[in-house]
Image (cartoon, rainbow, N blue to C red; front, side, top):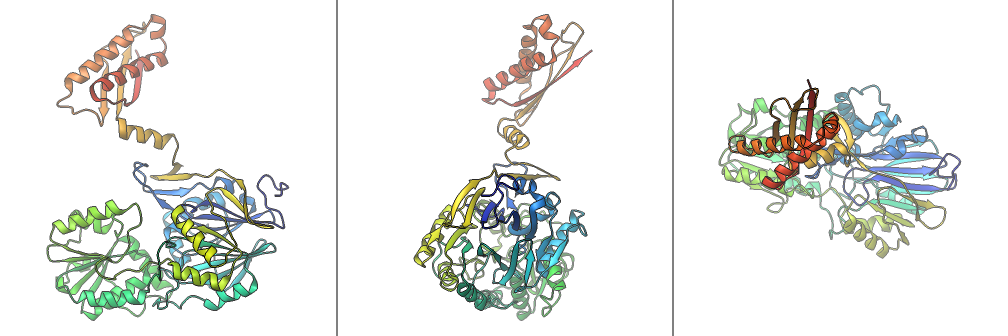
Length: 558
C-alpha cells in the first residue's frame, strides 16, 4: 500500500475495489476502483428511507472519503439510469467535480434531473457507445452491452496494468429483450480468453433457481390479459422499463384502447426514450387530462406507484385524492412489477384500498406480467463459464444474496471470493485478493433541500420527538429572578387540548415550584432556569403519560 499520496493511496502495481455503498445492501451504489494513485467511480445511486428516518424519503451514500481525494478522482462511469445507480449524481456531483461518462439514454435522463437542480451545463457529461473503449486516467474502460429492465444497461470492463475487472452492474441474459439487442455474448467470452482477474457482480437473484425470464413473455401475457377486461385498465410498472411501456402500448392498440401516462417520472422517461430513438413505433401517449374524454372501455392508464409510494399517482388514485384521474368499481389495476423488499406494507395498503372500491387487482403471482431484470442462478453459471474470473466480489445484495452468489461461483471454479462490506478496501492485485483496510462510510438523508447525516443530531432529534413528543415552556422573570405571570406550556403529540387542561395546570405548577426552589443567584442564571423547568416538564409528562418529551425552554428577562 503506497502512502506517497497520503493514507489509502493505491500504488502502481495495485488494483483496489472500495464500495462506499451497495455492498451487503440493495441500493446506494457507490463503487471506487483505485490504481496508481488515482480513483475511478462506478455508479452513484440513492436508496429509499424506511420508518427509522422520519420525514425522509431519499438517502445517499456519504462520499466523504472520495471528496477528500477529489483531485485524484478521474471520472464517474454510470452503468445505467436506475435511481439506485445514478440518482445521487444531482445531489453529490458538486462535491466531486469530475467528468461523467454515460451512454445516450442514461445521459438524457441525467440531464433532466440536473435541470431540476440548476446543474445543466455545469456537469461535464461525455456520451460513450456500448463497446467503445476510452481512457480515464490510468484506467482503460470498455462498456459491455448486457440486458436489463431499462435501455442501455452496461457492464464496465476496467483494464489496468495490474489486471482486468468486469463490473457487471445490473444485468440478465434476456433472449428477447424487445427494444435492444441481446447481451454481447462474444465480448464476455473474449474476456475469458483474455484473462479476467475479477468479477464484481450483481447478487440480487443469486438465491433464485433457473432463468429470470424474458420481456417477450410479458408482452404476450399483457396482450392476452387486456382482452379479459371491459372497463378501464390501469397498469403500474417501473417508469424506466421502456420495453414494458412499449408492450403495454401494443397490447392496448390490439384491443382498440388509447394509453395515458399518469405521473411525472413516466413522462420524463418517455421523453428521454423518444429523444434517443426508442418508442417511435407506437402511438403517442395521451395526458391524464385527455384521458377523461376517453370511454372507459377504450382506455389504459400507466401509473407511477408500483411500490406504494404515498405521493405517487396510483396511491393518490386509491385514496381518491388524484386531481384528475379516478377509478371505480369494475375497473382493473395490473401490477406489472415486483415488490422491492421493505415496500410490502405500502403496496398492500394501496391494493387494499383499491379492492375495497370494487377494483380488481392483478399481480405477477396471478398472471406472468413481470420478469426480473437480474440474473437467476442459471445465468450466473453461464457468466462464469464464459468469463472464468480468478476472483468474485459479490455486491448489489444483502448478505444472504452475497453468500448464495459466493457458493455458486465456487461451484463454477472461481478460486477466490471476498464478501465486501461498505468501507472495506479489497486489494484485487497483486497477490491473493484480500481486505487491506477500512474507511469510514455513512449515509446522508435528503431533508427537504439539504443533505444531513442520517445518524446525526437532526434525525436523532426528530426521532425522539416522534416517539416522545415535544414541549415548549415560556417563562418571564423580573430583575430579581422572580416569575412574572404563570409559566406557559404547550406540547405537540402529547396533549388533547380539550381534555388535558388540568394536566397542563399541574405541569405549570411543577415548573413554578422548581424555579421557586432555586436560590436567588441560581435564578439569575438562564441555563439553570432552563434545566429546572425542563426537568419539571419531563417529570410531569413522565408521571402522567410515561413520556419524556424533547423540551425547549424560553426565558425572557423583563
